[in-house]
Image (tube, rainbow, N blue to C red):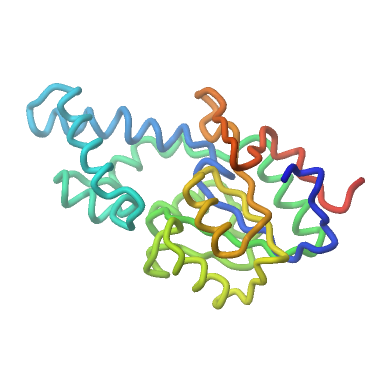
Length: 223
């Protein structure tokens, strides 16, 4: 489904992901692909490629689990303070183009806005404070509080119950295609991805989901 086919009169709720959807994923990429491997290489006296391999192997082992997103897990696994590593680059935390005007438009339309994120609580709170977008959301659903990551169906069952959200009247926007697939199975038919989560990378492609190129294109109740 494309944006032009949304029947906004039928929509009550818009659920947003945070990293890569509202926020530029460039920050997270710099943390995980550059600064963290450099820190690990120095700590263990190994080369940078070996450090990246250690991180990549652990990422693969923990894919689609809460550990993948947990600062506590990674700090223990690598012997480094992940919160400290993120702090060093927090000047890179920023909204994607069009994110704030979009949140303002949707609020003015009377829609319920929900933030659904896998981010560690400490990371989420840091990003919400820096960007100032917490005020736009009626509900904030964090995977670490719910007990399941968004790639798991129980996350969406709990979100629906906690927020009294009716999935048939809901839009989900998330840059993670695995999350979109799980949410669609759970009953959210209006599911949209993001074409360029990281402003410094090439656009993604998907044959399953419509990928939004520009957040400014989302305009409720307009012909």
